[in-house]
Length: 93
Image (cartoon, rainbow, N blue to C red; front, side, top):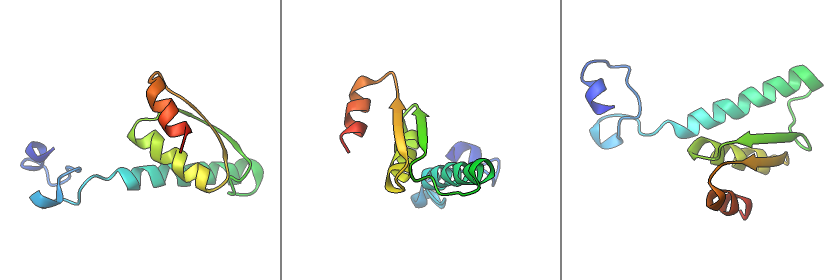
């Protein structure tokens, strides 16, 4: 992305050491989580995800942090991924 940054000032994921803001993962995940709360408010009349069943397919970097947000807010979370070791790791947290 640093190479892209030399051509476009709009490139993201530039390290702080090279003048960027770093990895935007936390902002991406929080945006996804907020979108889910808005959808719940539309569907159920409240953005509270407590007790709501949520399936997260793929628990890479974004999925892992999304599971964390959902779990911290008492959603009932099911996860699927082809990486069985990662499933065990995330399930044990």
